[in-house]
Length: 117
Length: 117
Image (cartoon, rainbow over the protein chains, first blue to last red):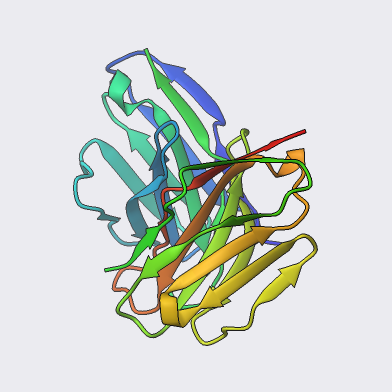
């Protein structure tokens, strides 16, 4: 079945530094990838939708300059948290689908737990 | 705009009891997909079921069953003879067919299920 690999699984960084999270589709071409953030005991909130080769579409309230998303190939999307601060500590999950057409399933990565100290 | 409501924040049951998790959704689309996911403490999302808006047949998979009723915009999930391993957070989610930037998935708040032995 479809597999999405997300790395790293967890990361601790100092306040003010940047962190990059990778999301790779291993056995399919991911035309569209989604990035979610989940705070403890809360739901998954969509941050942005990215289509290969084009700029990401951010949800309202998500800072584009803080959360940089790059979807340069059909198998790789990256989320960079720039100048991270403790309030950015969260669980980040990516999801990929093989097409924009309705009806494709979603495959999720295993998530990245970010702690900013 | 799409919206998913899971009114039950937390449910506790004793092993072998049956339990139903409620999900109510809102959408203006006539074509959409509904999903249920399980999130154990490890954090990864486990896909349970996908149902399209044109298929109102109930589904049973082992101890799991789903009741989809368009008339009440509900897609409830029942676990029969619950087990301790069923303890997790369960999310209901909705994806509308016609979206400009990709078929994003919107999640409900989640229901924490605790099964006690």
